[in-house]
Image 1 (cartoon, one colour):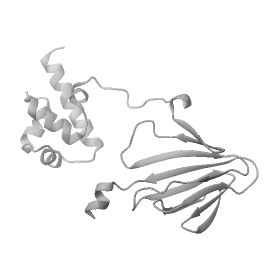
Image 2: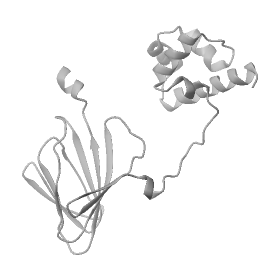
Image 3: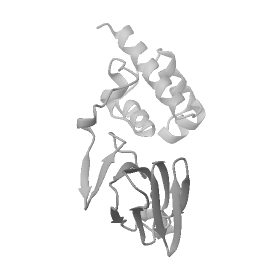
Image 4: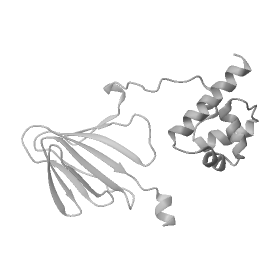
Length: 190
């Protein structure tokens, strides 16, 4: 590979990663602690950056040095069901829907057989949780309040309180739990 191809690849990767984060060059330069002109040179392909500039750019973008220099990857990846983590809590089958860790977020599919009930685990103070019912009827009890969800319904509630899920109908009920965690550091500093 020629130096020109590597510079172009670096420029393309930096531009795409910045755009994916909806940041301006000025914002990224500030995050990286480099002059705006240095960032612009990275994106133009005209730069011959030092290792410390590459390291700062990678850190600001939240990626490894390898990702800055790597050939472009496919924009999507298929995850067969067998690759998604599943677990059983009592009668309830729980499947993760985010194959890659996303800081502060968790999405799971809950499959509750007829008569099944599951107690949720309270999360970090300030956590918001959302339960969407896809099929059947799900009874959510959160902080003493009762919500009966039917297909298409969603309830938003405090995920840092006691809560439980139950199948309130006949047949299998399917729901999706979205948890927006609050960092323990944010709670401590707040």
